[in-house]
Image (tube, rainbow, N blue to C red; front, side, top):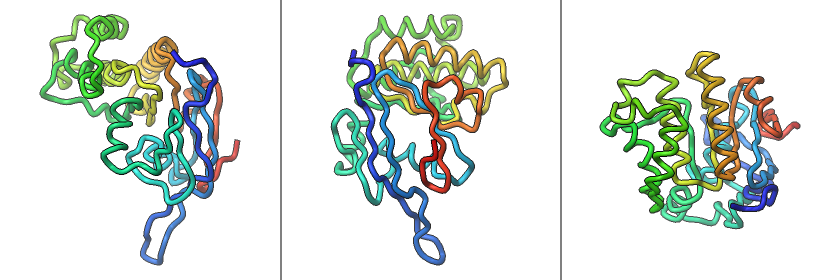
Amino acid sequence: MPKRGTSVLHLKDVSKSYEGADGPVPVLRGVDLTLGAGRTMALTGESGSGKSTLLHIVGGLDKADGGTVELDGTDVTTLDDRARARLRRGKIGVVFQQFNLIPSLDVAANIAFQARLAGRPDRAWIADLVSRLGLEAHASKYPEQLSGGQQQRVAIGRTLAAKPRLVLADEPTGNLDEESGERVLSLMLDLVAETGASLLVVTHSSHLAARMERRLHLRAGRIAE
């Protein structure tokens, strides 16, 4: 496990624009950000402030126009599509608001999926996750047979099964009621802490943001702490 606090993620002067009808539309305007190992951070901001774009760039799903994005000492901005895909499989886990489970796989297979992609299947750890997430009675069920809270717990288990260095979560409780959301959030924080992963959460929820160690606010593509 990496020493807590050492830098896992470092962004320097990251910029991104998209083409609009009248030319380039700036979305990120020189973002700086550092996240230490085992640390948690919330990224808040109004719709259109650039939160999701930043998360996609950190996760290697999109490329920055300028600046650097270092993950574990690797500058993601210099990698081609194939190398970014390898980095995602090996070091990054993503928890989506929409769960994105594989309908044809049962709970146990969904949880094991990411670890198999990363080449790190660990049957004991996956069984422990199924138990810790309260899914033992549902292990042979399929996503459509689960409640929203149960599906999100499966998604968290899938993400953590590969023991990523960095977990990215995009509104992870946004589709859940308050009670289910609180339960899921607590489980995610406990398991992230146990694995030593760093956690970056994009959220509109002030309650969720308050559970993180640090909070950054994006306004018009710039960080305003």
